[in-house]
Image 1 (cartoon, rainbow, N blue to C red):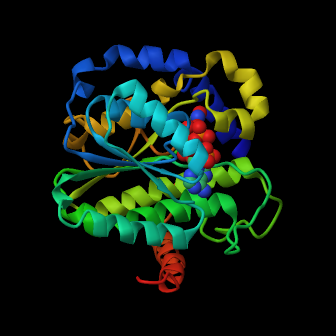
Image 2 (image 1 turned 180 degrees about the vertical axis):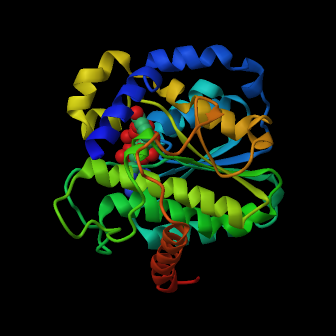
Length: 328
Ligand SMILES: NC(=O)c1ccc[n+]([C@@H]2O[C@H](COP(=O)([O-])OP(=O)(O)OC[C@H]3O[C@@H](n4cnc5c(N)ncnc54)[C@H](OP(=O)(O)O)[C@@H]3O)[C@@H](O)[C@H]2O)c1
């Protein structure tokens, strides 16, 4: 079955996820959708120093938005901030140093950020969970968490739930999570969130985390009706992550990969267009349109109780780290 899923997915990818796929999809795009002035609105972008996150931050900055770059490495982040300010002329670009694999740091950041924005919550609009990683060996964080899970799933969960009080009060609040089409090969598995048993396959762990992000988005959409949630696949884009984490794939596909800006296009559309929020909350997007979250005949549907259980388990993890964070 996994051979079937992988093959169907790869063939689909060759047609849809490549630069050619983007060029063909973009023929139906309406350019005016993203010709929007977002001055006065605030956008928080994680992993904004590189690849798709930086391309997204730049396009929002070009449209006048206030952009909060959330990055883990100060030097890399400062270089990116400088580039965004210089290229766009927008001075309202702010930097926050947070390692998203470290739950305590996320809680601390969220508390500080909310305190700073207490008085002008209505201008806060949007959060883009873009940071992600594919670590190919089983590595643990200082808290003993498996790194892919900590960054992609738990980090995304805590970053979003910690900022919910702010988002709940904002006008036109949107949360966009950058998942991956790779999630289509995985059925939600809540029995081994930290990959403790069996052999470790970083690509499949990453794909499982990306499936979990889709489930999180669907669950958040049901629970928080005045926030618009979406999750998306950027396509296959030429970024540092692809080059370093998937060298064989990169070598094979490098001439067909999307640019970073093409990968960022649907995130931008979900973030700034009026069209995006006319669609229901909780959907999975590719090239500016909702697409199915399962491949045909792939048997990746999970029972609703597993999806609810995932939320409970993540809440338990997150509370464990919240309670030991000073001042919260
Ligand atoms: N490129 C593709 O073809 C593709 C396809 C499907 C999905 N995606 C998704 O797109 C998103 C962006 O990836 P990308 O391709 O643009 O790769 P990228 O250029 O390497 O960007 C990844 C970003 O995430 C940050 N990050 C990773 N771990 C972090 C942590 N613990 N704390 C804070 N930030 C962290 C990285 O920071 P550093 O610079 O410090 O490492 C970097 O800024 C990811 O979620 C990825 O899964 C990409």
